[in-house]
Image 1 (tube, helix red, strand yellow):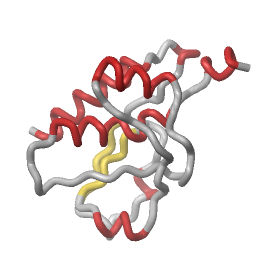
Image 2 (cartoon, helix red, strand yellow; image 1 turned 180 degrees about the vertical axis):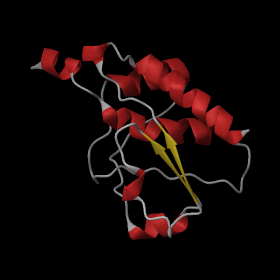
Image 3 (cartoon, rainbow, N blue to C red; image 1 turned 90 degrees about the vertical axis):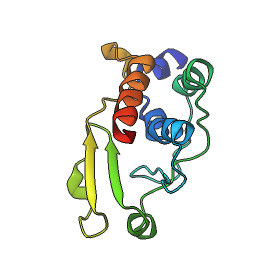
Image 4 (cartoon, one colour; image 1 turned 60 degrees about the vertical axis):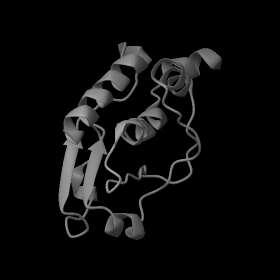
Length: 130
């Protein structure tokens, strides 16, 4: 069973990577971030979280917050950090802008390593902040 789990995708990690890195490097006190997955309550965990913490200093823990009308009204910009979430899920009247970062999930079956995903997200966040 453990071997099977190690070979499956681990999308729970990438849900919070962008937020964790943004919060770590953001110097503008007026910019706030929140993160949510399409489904509420999935536990965040897995090998990716340990690598994010030990190698990059990113603390990722807890359970995913699901999308809500309150969250969608709060935000000014929606950044979709996934290559498999259609922007049509997000109603344009809620936000001023929708940005899609086509970040592929961690997938050890296809040699998509945690480190590759983290590096992709770091590059996107750095570019976003500039």
